[in-house]
Image (cartoon, rainbow, N blue to C red; front, side, top):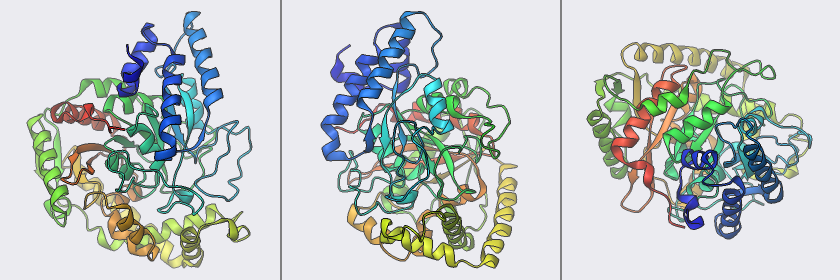
Length: 468
């Protein structure tokens, strides 16, 4: 197998090749690290690279295989983790310069579980400051390898770029208002935002405790399923982690069926007010779903507009709580954009937060009613193709609450905690990747993975990679 082709392989293929002895973890890890060294000056995907430690861990992984020891599903495979996740021996910056409070020995549960499954963490992926919309002034933003003039998605910008450019076979992202889904769509990736609480948040620096989700990003549905199977489940160190059995996500992805699956579409919500590229992509995606066996069902989605701005303000209020130990005492270490959201959060009225909490419960109930009629929903990730970097800077540089309408397809499912699977749906005429999401009922990850794999097979989206 030619080393130059290693970064074109899917995670599942690399894992199988290492397990079968066709590749070694050292060979693959060294290839990935060489690629990082080549591309990092241009793409800026990593906050920290663990070159020496990763190679040592790869050598240990190969030694365990040689001794015939049991191997995890990710044995020897290089991955990245978002730099919100504590990991022993690394700094955890959360995209900023404030003190995140993690000790040098702390490791997040999600990182520990990846390592227990055998993964080699090659580095900490860069992100926007505090996991909101703007990179810290001292951070060079990651660059989209598909279209360098286009947005990478936030906040898991480095996670998306690292996988899209072949610098990791999968990455961990977090999602509070779209931060797995935006970078997945912008970088032609698959991203799973699990049910809230399905993946432990222990050791993950929070943006907003009741909105934050942790999940995997990779190039195929099966790759995402392998990572999700490794990280999901109850955690005694996180009381909010769900205790229900995870089941077999990998078998669900391998099952790959849409036969008889009812996919709900609200045309007024999901198919209007889109730019032409996104509308064309959605029509194509829906056609692929139908051709693969799905039944498209007209549904009425709850009115989201009145919830968006209150939800963003509630998120900011929770961010103010998360940063109480360092803000305003370390105000000079924050960027101006993040200061603006923390100030809004600190000033939010308790009655406004209480009002949102009541709306949140109502929205959950309304969405539950929709899922009484269908198995899944299909909606865009964004109403428009990825903006240019300059256009996005104008949005994120404006008043923070003004960005709420841009999250019309993402924020509602962080509010309700429903799982979603982002899938590629081609590219715009300008070359920007496009993505849509399937949304499932609570704990509906298996159905999402099976349906997503069937769509992927029909649409042929798993073979594409950014040329860089």
